[in-house]
Length: 253
Image (tube, rainbow, N blue to C red; front, side, top):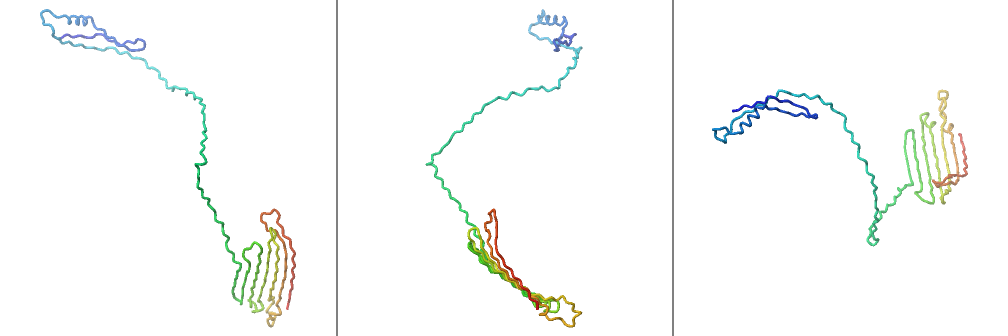
């Protein structure tokens, strides 16, 4: 077996790139040429064993290269200018093909709440107190209205000497109006009768309690009124003109 040995190896740099160059001794080249020729006295066609040993004895160190950390800026592509054209086709259907079936919804007219023209109130209390109130009025009408209000409240006795502190109050009012367009013509009649007992006397200075009729005082009032007024709520001018008469009478027993 023949032994071939590389006795020289090195790295070289050409143009910034590393190349490996290996030099073989002249003995290697010569041995390879001698091996290619057949030896005398031996049979041809045999392969002889050979061993090649490569020894590296030199390392070239290259300097460090600087790195660029800046990002590469690429300009955005220019926006193309496009002109958009719109078309508005007019679709018309023949009137003969349209036969809509529309049902009109009707709103039911709101019914007015029924009015009751009469009102009555009664009551009883201590000291023989009687209370009553009555309102008698017409119902809803576009031409006229009328009403009667009656009120009564009386106490037969009171906290001081029985009948000497009794009281009575009675009143009645009648009203009526007639409507003509936006004008209302009306009249009213008032009657009132009130009875009181002045029981503010000093009981310790009197031997006996005074008679109830002796300290009774009655007030009577009478009034009448006629007027005309505007009944249009949306009118810019609201007016009311009238005439009134009031009479008062006092009776002391």
